[in-house]
Amino acid sequence: MGKKKTNLYAELKDGLEEMVAIEKGEREPVRVHRFFTSADIKALREKAGVSQRAFAALLGVSSRTLQDWEQGRRTPTGPAMNLLRLYEAMPEATAKVLADQMALAS
Image (cartoon, rainbow, N blue to C red; front, side, top):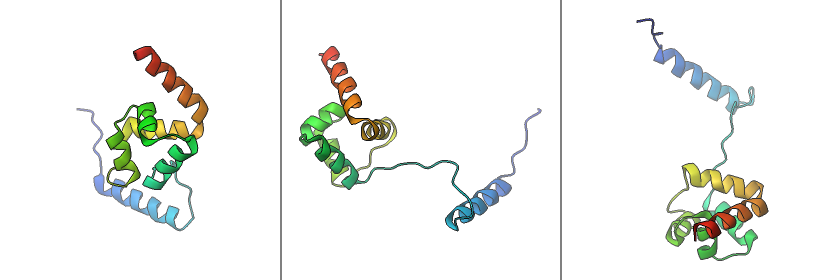
């Protein structure tokens, strides 16, 4: 009772029209999501100058997971993606906070 009825067709149509306008350069996207490729992740690690094992420990993932990301077998999602975004934007501060947290957990 009192629920607004959704017209899925109209929403889909509007979304597709918006997508076409963005592709044509007639409109800017409302949001832009940054996804990391395997090369991006490897470049972040190499810029940090650390091994896969050390970078994986810093991020709180297994070495195997990091290897899979770097070799394109898997893609980071959710919190891991956000952590990579944060590390990319502020590597020193992120590394310090994560290292401090690892020390506290030990």
